Image (cartoon, rainbow, N blue to C red):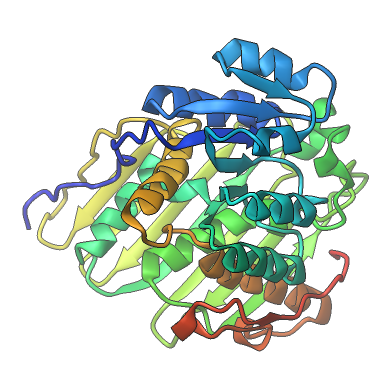
Length: 373
């Protein structure tokens, strides 16, 4: 087996006529969205934020011409063709309704909504307005994750039979985050973090899990309202199992860990996302591991991937890679995981979501409001 070629970089295409307006000027926009868009050459023409001075400050920093506190003024700008919705989950349905009615294409933060029911509504609003809806599952474009997908697409590992993903962080111990909207969410770890890794597993293996087992827990005395620890087992069939270990209440002084292992009949991939590193082994390479040099980082490089794909999709008249309909399947797995944790049993995501894939309908979703245990 020769050393394979990796296809992992975001699209380099430019679309100068597709002006971007951003709703939200928080830390993720300042530190990830806008640096990535500027590096990629994407035209950001407007930004809005309800907080006094936030849009003005960030807009000046990045040279954005229109800076407003009411996002509806942004929607009146004819140069805005795409709207990046980067606000917390609460209130998104109303914002999407206005953006879609204005005929603007949408990139929305993951998760698309905090419940499956709201997400189905968002998909319906975009579909009825005839605008494209993409979800910012940016991990798909993080270099180690995207390079792994490239190898899997080439069949490099043969038949994949086991995947493990570990995330260890300490956000519950960070004073600034203890005062954020994160800390007030009744459901936290799985809906805000594990959603990345569930989406990745679906992306990597190209199919849906049959059943999900999950357990959530809390750190004694934690500041966050929702769960901060989650363990999931995803059953993709008799010869493929995946395990996700999400721990966001680790010892405060320990470094963040994001690691994964993908095992196949022909080889193995071991990834370290924090170190931007892969170790690749193949059965025809005895005692050798290939470590490809990867360009870019998850933050901010991958954010150019999600927006770039949407801009390409608009130009090519195709659905975006992470469409609203596709994301509903990820959210169905999240809902199945919460139900599994609450009731102590395996849950089939298909029982929570019925989607008519043939005509792109959003289907019917049933969401539970169970608090995390």
